[in-house]
Structure formats: C-alpha cells, structure tokens
Length: 71
Image (cartoon, rainbow, N blue to C red):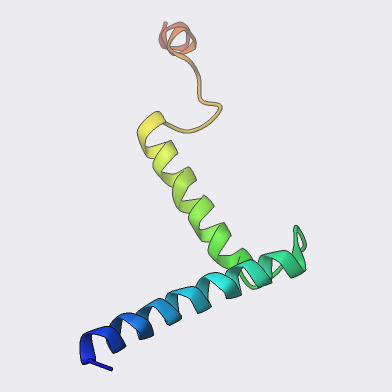
C-alpha cells in the first residue's frame, strides 16, 4: 500500500473508532451519569459564561427598575 493511502486509512480508522466509542458510551448509559459528564458540564459552563458576558447576569434589574432605584 502506498504511504498516502496508508495514512488516510489509519486516520479514518481512528476517527471511526472514536465515533463508535462515543455512541457505545452514550447508548449504554443513556441519561445516567457517565464518563462524558465532566466534559458536558465544562461546555455548558463556558456557554453560560459567554451568555452572561454578552447579555449580563440573569435576573438583574431591567432598565426601568434601574432608573427607579437611581431616584
């Protein structure tokens, strides 16, 4: 086999193995806690941080309430 084809086959095999492992893990455990939960929590935490940075903290006073408290 030529080196380029061998490289493509190895990379395809690695990607397919990782995808199959992910599906097997999530299929076996379903909604119960599993090894991927820490990664999921980190992603959700980063998502919440970005939302708070862009839109401000949740439950903060609205513009009308801010003007009333300034008086």
